[in-house]
Structures are given as structure tokens and as C-alpha cells.
Amino acid sequence: MSQELRDFRGKVTPETDAVLEALNRATGRDKSEIAREVLHRWAAEQLEAAKLMVRLSTCEGRGGESRGVRAASQGAAAEDAGGRAK
Image (tube, rainbow, N blue to C red; front, side, top):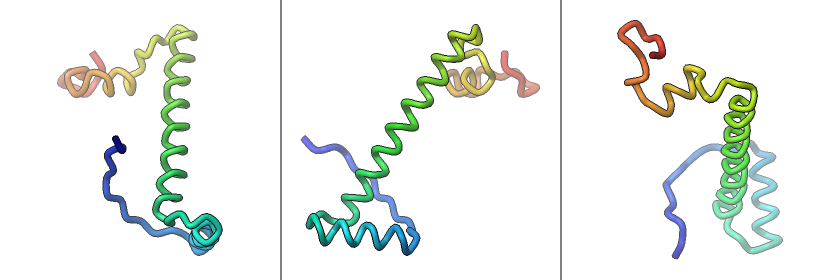
């Protein structure tokens, strides 16, 4: 079963395009497939970094209670009428 894909269109620099074109010619893989793989790898690294940040905060006694983590995990209900974290 293949992974669900979402449509994304964006512009790249001439250098990026040249590398994608060279890889396409060398491997026969589609440029969009190469770009998708690179972006997926980058996104996975970002997610891992975010998890590490949460773990480090917890180890340092913050326990994920910063306004950003609380608001992200509990949504708008985490704030009182003045916009402050409950």
C-alpha cells in the first residue's frame, strides 16, 4: 500500500533544479520523486528535533508546560479570556 500524497507546487532555485535534473538523468527517477524524498527526510528530522525539545524540556522540569506546548496540545481551550494560558 502506498503512502497518501498531497499536492504541493513550489519554485526552486536554479541550483536546486540543476541537481534535480542531474539526478533525474543519472538515475532515471522523476524530479518530483527526488524532491519528495528530500522533503520527507527533512520533515522527519524536524519532527525528531521537536520530540527531543519536548523531552529536554521535561528533563529540565518544564514538563511541556510552556504556553506554546500547552496551547498546541490543548487547543484554544488552554487559554483564558485574556489570552493567557490557564
